[in-house]
Length: 371
Image (cartoon, rainbow, N blue to C red; front, side, top):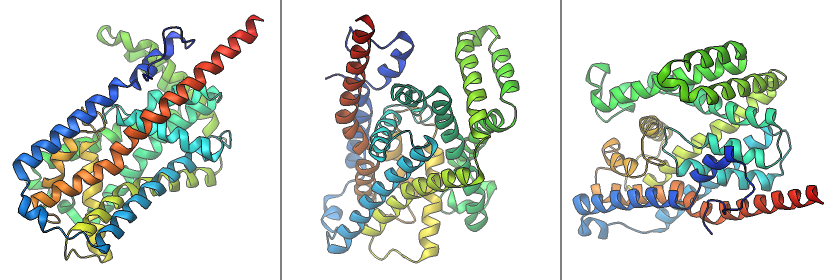
């Protein structure tokens, strides 16, 4: 069944963009980009003799298993955050299902866009109030950004510029990727500041600013969406200001666990395959810092889920940990299969079933109204 709705689907026009963004054809592009990237790496960097040297021992499979465990913990952490923000409106199983859909929508969207628009649509279909839906989606943007904005300066204090690329000793020799990292960090700071201001300081003023800016001729086509975002900010702000400090601490803790598991998963894969790598806390913490930095750099990738871009970038960022190019290709391929393509494949099963249920519910509701 295609992920787009049938022609007689009762979904209104304003939901069509969200539905189109999770249709089946969206899965094809990231898969093709990923396959092309892996094929390129195999052609340029794969050495059969080096591949034959890989020891598939109990140690290897143990750490691969740990990676799978961290993937599960990451998913459950996101589900627990959704359960908390939804104030018990969903069961745990429903939260787990919705996170699959949310992650799938992020996987088929450019990383610079993400799955927030789809999240609004999905939560609305689950009969969640407008206030709660806006709170969940907008607050998760702030929480995710806050994790990086607070973490990265602390990591820089520990590891300096070397956390950005191997061999860097200071800002003066950052190079292109280092400069792009600074740009990505500042961009994240800018948009998260706007959301924070709108949610916790003055949402009405932000709405006036958004609608005012979009009166400029070349921005007028965004005016309706800007006004809607402003209204959502006002509603979500009212909800968030009612919450206790425990609510915010628990939400941030779940966010931190989820993101940390995303990077530690790759730590485990590198330990699994790289013989003799130091497994003490400090060396693994330094590796973790590099991985978090790498993610910020790919955060604004134009490709869906960073497909193709991530696979090529991986080796250069970790040459001081994985010097063997063949091994780097193997690790990056397994990493992407676990952390990215698993959500694509799961979404192909879960999303059509979810859409079918929502379509049937709407048809039954309309039939009841007509009788």
